[in-house]
Length: 334
Image (tube, rainbow, N blue to C red):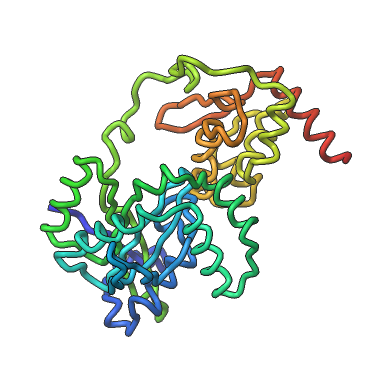
């Protein structure tokens, strides 16, 4: 038996269950409402994901014939992978995964230039002024856009429920190394207001995420070649490429008395949410490995210690901390 989400309102200490309702009962629609919610909060598709375009239908076959298919949302995650999102109002049909796989196959043929063009055009349609070269720089540095990353998009299916035929097929596809996720939403009427929740139904968390095992000292211990040590020039290059969460992490760890530095502390310092921190930090390793960025280091300038319960604690070598403090002081004086 699969347990469903339970929502309660609490008044005067008494919890009252809120019955679940369908989007149809609220007269809410797929494109006008559900799709707009995801576009406004693309982290529903995964931490750090940005929107490339929506309602994309400019497909054509090898012989030049137009293909009449419309992709709901195309995103890009911090690891440089395209995200194909297929949305369904209420329960998904039994063929929803087949439709999404078709879209994934088609977007895998896009080029980085295509993605930059789609990203720029979509943002311009939504009232934003976007320079093509600025968009290219953003997508290549913050989201690691490359031709190789485009070839293996991941798929996200969003619906209120999924039939057994879909869940069984999705499990099998993941076993064949097709990255496909199921996101389930729930709608409620809470004291006259509509509330909607989104949660990942599949893949489920691994058992290891819920168990407490041997304390792992540092992620650097498992890396055979850490590369060159961090120096002032490399730290300056990193500062120029880093997002808000990375800068906040390094500033906190480099403080003379850093104390405990975890994701929550980074989120507070960067003025972003905890999921946003995880998304922004996820791309740091890929930035180091991207030859275009010119790094000769293979590990972060901070160490990660995993505490009981799977809680990450960050620290920095005192010599690197001194270099980072000097760099940041120079930047503030400039």
